Length: 90
Image 1 (cartoon, one colour):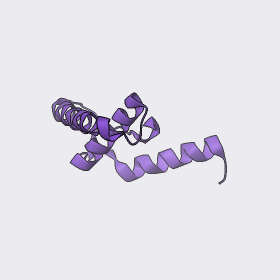
Image 2 (cartoon, helix red, strand yellow):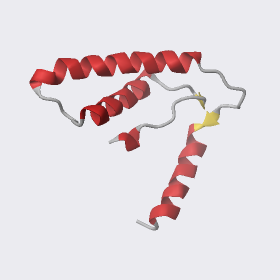
Image 3 (cartoon, helix red, strand yellow):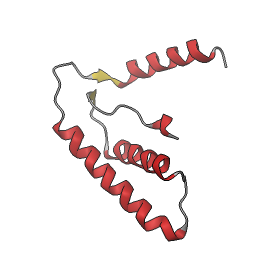
Image 4 (cartoon, helix red, strand yellow):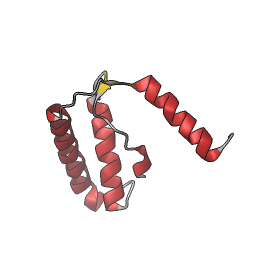
């Protein structure tokens, strides 16, 4: 489940609220052990996602770095090359 959480800091353009929420959702799914909570747990699940998304957005707004921003496409190419080396041809 957590393999979908990606680095969100120091990218140009900055991470969107949808990306932040998706990372929060993946985190809550991993911690809870459930991709779809029961009706009894849905409210707690949704509340946790929103709180973690808020905390993540706050963190990203306050982080500083002297490194130049990364390009999303360049990082995606690097990730595909690493996957190719690790898993071979599909």
